[in-house]
Image (cartoon, rainbow, N blue to C red):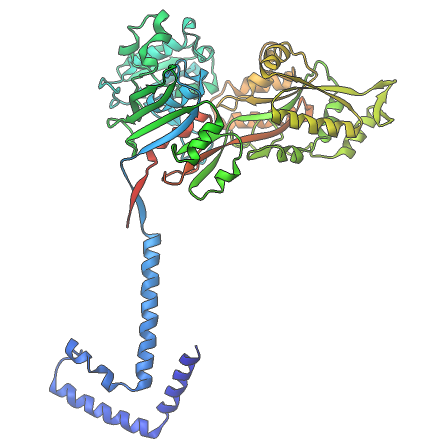
Length: 596
């Protein structure tokens, strides 16, 4: 900067020097003489080499400075153009390898939901009428897959589908409406014992033409569209297989579907355990073909084995519930958090704890933030069963934030008196029992709850059971006072199965909660397809539930998806269940080139 200012100063003094002005006038006369001898106004390249001899030192310095500035600008513009106006264009090829815990059994959409490994593979091999849109800002939005379009005649409970006419099975035969009808008839047939039986058993299916059909529901059931993501089976393969051979057919492990990948081979060990399962790209896929040539799945007995394989780069990806900070800190590992439709809560058995004031006091006495510190994975606090990433309603207010003083006020207003550190009423001590599974994380949470309730003045016993016993004996018989448990909800936000009175006995209404107003809202919401109306209903349901306090809602815990950085094209993954993390795997790639 000093050099630049000094140059300008010298130029100023010379400009006002009389001798300098005389020389300039002489130069102007010389220039006129030269221009009269030549019509060219611009010097040639040969003449430019003599330019320095006509410049004074200060002029040469100014020229050098300008050239440096121009050079810097050109370099800056070139870098900016490269960064802003170029993008990586994926190149086809390569293989993605993922680790899974377990082993395939029935890679068949009719049975796949019973096994997470089967569901993962089935999602890649088969296609449904609808699928979840990973690019939508609206959570879990349904879009067409095999369906080209569909219409809903709500008063008549009829859904009419027009399916694509350019879809072919992996063996080359064309997919038609007959395949869709055949699959749905299997799902509604009791003998096949599909997990989808209750949703499909009462529907009527009618063929319109080879690429059109309609589904008639016994009554309007808004969650039904979510079940139409189920994969469609090829009729020409499965119609020849008898019912008693259905689970034994080779196509359960060597399936023929219409999805973006198709079966190539599998390798078993000497005990019959499948070690690897390889899919290859379906080059005739009706949507955007995948960039990967192959997907290779490797199966492990434990998380530790799979994580070791990831660290040694034998696999590229693995989905875990816990945080493994040493792996996340590695620069070559990309990680994403997947929040699934599930939540953990403390459920009051409302037949045994009928006092709403007591339930509210217990809610105020729990420090949810402290509970989060015990979780070895990302999670967020919740205040209702409608987690924020399910539907577009306002988040539930934090009505029962940690406040032991309010809890004490509620208990004392209800007639309880603190004696010897324990609340009593009519010489009866305030005691509660918390039933919980024997898993390490549930035990830690139960101990926090016990400590905080006892600090408030409520004697608290922890009753621990093995997971299987807790489900089969304690939960099924409703043999608990208070229950710590995690609920996995449907892909649709419909809270009916957990909170309607009809589910209080043999269903999954774990709070044994019965409320006529809530029942009416839940019945109305599941009998309308209009999402705006449903969201309004669920907002009202949420407010009623918080007021009644049949449960204390704690958190929604995520899973961590660890993927090698060599896998490109991965954007935010929105997965309503584990298997839908593969919905846009056809956009992942390994190599690419920069292009403007």
